[in-house]
Length: 184
Image (cartoon, rainbow, N blue to C red; front, side, top):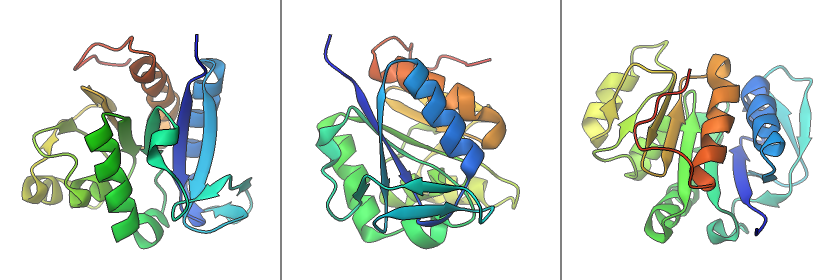
């Protein structure tokens, strides 16, 4: 069996550490290699200002087809650092190539703006009550679930769903998830 690989894209400053750590851990327990990509090289710093991660590649030099999945981690730095043309293009490349993709927390908003959630069932963080109008504007179908799988797209609400998010990503890239499957 070929080695499976998933990319986790994090903001160089202000990513959500629980979402990153628990998602990564769930993927690695499933036997999937994780590549950490960010908008800047070397080290990324979590929102807590303490936890740091070594970055494997930058988004500018990253080939989205090198892995089986491309997923964005949330956190307060996500919109500022990852809601960019280059990230939008990489998401569109993943969609065109049939590569699994998705996001957790606030980051599904980036997928919406990139145009890769049109007519797709999705979820995300909505503590500011802005997700529903954004989803409506960009054609996403917002559902009230912690983790949503629609085809090869996986979205999740935030830290409490991090492990389930990673488990669903693993199932999707292994071809084991049923469309619309709920994660408990």
